[in-house]
Image (cartoon, helix red, strand yellow):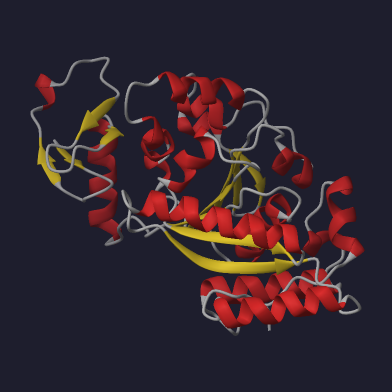
Length: 310
């Protein structure tokens, strides 16, 4: 039986008879990573299927939508980014790590299980994932995530790797995994930053948000001492109002400092704030609105496909 480490891709030849029946996880001898293991039957089926079709697991891009300040449009961005990627033909998993569980509300769905059940292993991964739209799947958050915070805090070591270990089974099944984070800086946010490979930061064009970005960058630098592969790839200005001079000035300053990471701003648009009340994405609620157009620009930027939605 061949077991492959999801992190370093090291192939381990294991005698199936030596694996305890109740064993659910294995630790890579090469990099020390703890990850879920498959049964011999699943591994055989996967290997035979790959050999017959000539296909392999798809590379998965993991993007964390994060900023310690609240009210900047993180959930709105995570939902519409995920939905837009799904409309563009990609298989997408949206992971909600916020105790408010607003991603489910925004999509108009009520999953019976989600991220908590996956982490605690109460249910199988297939039972935890909810299909919200075509090609768009959801690992719901909610109040019960507060218990996960305590679970992480009680760990003597390795608590920051909780998400990476629990979500390892999801990699290869999706083109994108988008992780929505909560405001503030807590154990859940740290665990997300140890899991995501790319960071997208929504930033409302106001002075307090700039202060929040400065503090977030300092915290991210601390994470990168232990995990160099995580990087701030995108800064998304939100709530742009052309009538407000201060917003324009802040945007100009951002272009000077973060020219490579800066995305096309999301204009202040009432349709964006109305859509969640109807359980719809901006593409469903007001597909011709400026907000929908701006989020399509973001999809093109993330996928590096300028022809998408044209």
